[in-house]
Length: 141
Image (tube, rainbow, N blue to C red; front, side, top):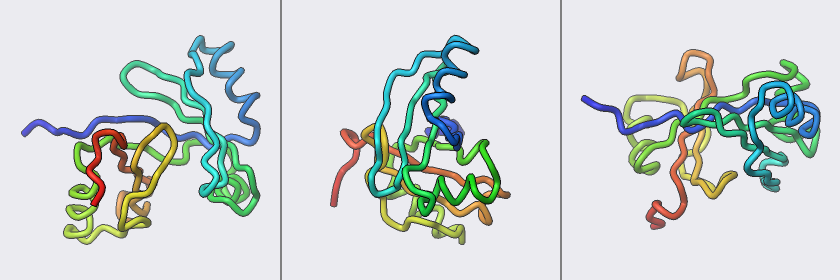
């Protein structure tokens, strides 16, 4: 059976977004193609395509935000892996039916014009997993 999921991006928590963008662009030759602030998640993001996927650099805008708390506890590093799915509501329902612990039981707006929902790391062998679907393809109900 062929999977319809694809690796969309890897989220990397950083203390200084501008410095991290310089590291990946000047040091590794990647290009930053999109920056955005996601107010409700208290985060500034930068996307750097790498092949068919991207790196998403994440800087907290508040020490109380998810990325601020992550860095305070664990330091900089990989925060999450994002799988793009064809139907986020179905993916959430499937994960729930399999007994997975969900952080989001309903999709919410995320960066880069995506619907997103997170699966708790306790259900995915220690990895915070983001499910995403482009908003223009999503059916709101």
